[in-house]
Length: 396
Image 1 (cartoon, one colour):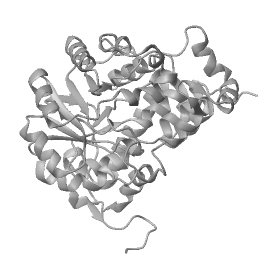
Image 2 (tube, helix red, strand yellow):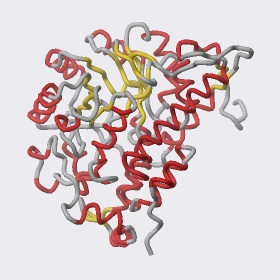
Image 3 (cartoon, rainbow, N blue to C red):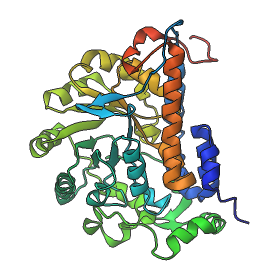
């Protein structure tokens, strides 16, 4: 029997990102949901990303008139309705046909940037018409022609920024994903039965098959061009040889905003600054790479103090509440990249689900501002936070 197929009404009734996550889990086959939801190895980093937010608690200011408060800000000199960017995520076409376009349209309607992944299932030129502020994420593959082509297409599409992802070229062991396949692109019998239990999801792909990696497919071997196979094959095509010389060459080639996505150490932020990068993204790849890794939120205060006036500092990994965003902004982040939260919305309800996820986060953020006695994001500061052990934990 098919699990319940959730309607737009169900998505609109969702009150939290966690509720969207539950809807997404019920709508999608297990191998698809695990690809989005899972982390590396024992998922220590995945859990730590969430737990890190509990290490800081708010000290609100009272008797402040917060009527008319707002979440607006600016990023690279242009306005944002909220300090949110939809993060680059790959293979979104497995969640919904045209998933990348749905994410971009929702971002455009919300007046937020959208970052397209190198391994997306839509071309940059097609997404460019859906969102005013389009960014492009870059993986470096063993074949240098792929990098050159992705950069060229991003330039032709008018992408505002290029995010060079540096933390995935030695790929993490995502054991949930591995258990779903007995060989590249071939699901286990158990996974096939689970897919058959989701006929409405399957119907989206029955006519035209699984989506392809249209930005890079022409360079891939035939067996790696479809999303179902790429989950396991693409990591073998990444170049483990990337270094800071690649950043320097990319800086010479790319004349718009350049950010390094994968920074967690202050010395790496310093090198990005010296090479002329416009910003950095503090990330542990959502807990999908090095499992015994710090949470980006843990290193944010140190890096923001040292570089916040000289680099644009973005952060991702583990954000599920507006209060998480408020804490990051208070500690010096300029904006937050949101990945899984909007993907849960996409899987649960398509474009309407993405819009609902953004509405949840922005309304929570606006409410937290009021409860803290803040009229805008500029009122947030470390003075509103008290660091300490995570809630429920005893100090060492």
